[in-house]
Length: 287
Image (cartoon, rainbow, N blue to C red; front, side, top):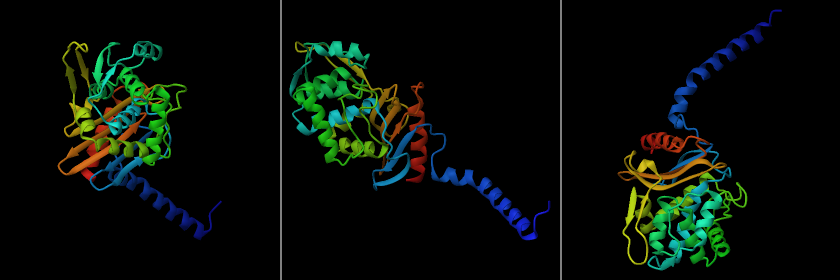
């Protein structure tokens, strides 16, 4: 059956328009967002201007694994007294074993300063260090977690909740969560502290042994520190529910970019670094 002339003309016009859109989309897309990013949630902000350059599911709540430890560090930094000596509790051994958790290899009974425990917390992502700091600065684990949530409220992190101090999947996998928008805000708040910046910018940290404690050598889990020029932090994260995540910051000249990728992959431990590399390459071209 033949179409009326006017309908036939409209069909031709619509077909040409759709063809035009199909051809134009890839070039337009390449200009407006970084390609090849696998993360389920992400954000990139130009911290120099405060403008959000790009995001994906900016306010969707997700678990973030050990990025949680950025808030743990922030609470400790706010209380201060980083020369305070803290005895590593004997309970850390059972805690790490119970959850098969990342560890700084702390020896129970060692006396370490709060600053040294922050190194153990943020570089090798030591859940044992998180436990020791929370126990000391709460004082007690429950009080410390309450401090974390109070600080989240102060920062305006309306879609963030901490059920623990290290991001491990207890009491449930999704009990501790945040969003790309909230985590960028958290990262900015933590990076205001010189002590925090100096720690997360290190590839490794060596602590000589003495009568108070054993010797330790901790390596940063953030592989971009040695592969991407200008990266200055911040923190990796991973659990089964969270996938591989990274809260990151990088600076080229006067331009400081801060961002996050959440669940870049469930199985590939390099995916968050690949995603971040693509995002930063795009970001420094468009900042």
